[in-house]
Picture 1: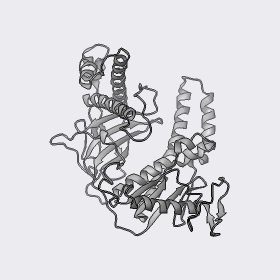
Picture 2: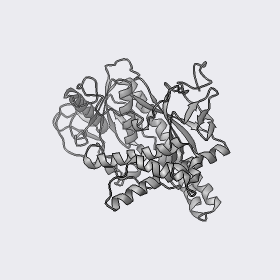
Picture 3: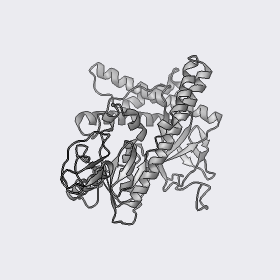
Picture 4: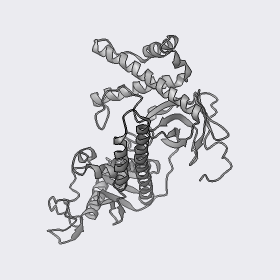
Length: 422
């Protein structure tokens, strides 16, 4: 399976200028190729092939006066930008034809230098890990990185990213073997909520940190300061970065919380079942801010790929399943209840239920039924389980082709003799 490892990078002034130029060249190639395909479609002409675009918008464009600066960056960056455009079109066409599962994908859009995220993608022909712990990027130089953990294998792809608050990240894609954990008897049904982030079928509750709510006071103050600055001024640019940094802190804390909670659940349970919530629909209600602050979709995605990685069973219970209406003791359906009802008594057997705990138990029972029917991503479900719809943390389209005699290696260069990395 493919995994993604992110590390913070610290380029110097010259390297930041080189990366900015690379971001801009990749964006120009993307926009030029996208414009050609849109114009061809509007004129009723056939779909423009990638080979023709590569020859016209990269090879020949470098020889023109207005695009001569494309030679200042690595050719791999330009070719990868065109491949990313091809992937975007493929996802769009597959979504239209029904071949792609999930939400509908729109057509590719033009990129802007004002986008909150700038990135370039490289294969192993344009980067390598150095012995001194730096990462060499073609026509950029040796980038210093903060190695928080070892790479389990030689990376096949590298994405250099700059976020809205000016931070740089190195994102490696590696092919790693599954890390199968010892088998357990315990199984967990999970009910996600707002008052408590998650309630497990065994009665455990994970509190909701509400990271955005806790940071709202400071965010409001920073946003007021930003609104008072003159547009186009340097002070406004500084104020914008302060707002972006505060939002980044909120997102980082939430992501760290999701990783720790999902890892603990996967380690403690042989099978994990969770309700498939309509997050996009709930995001349009009066609870939108709290729903987005909880980040249910990201948490469920982590549970899913970690279950695949560690050999656990994972299943989603359909959102139409009445988990809050059925008594988990006798199976009697007691009807819908408003959100303010947190405890209720079964009208058939008289059992007093905590709403969330009862729902988690029902999710557990329904998940077991789904696994028994062979419709879950588990090795015991069917012959195709774990292969047809297995999700991992890195997209396979981002993996590059290893070159012959590549110099990239597993682990962190210069730190091979150490047992741990803090």
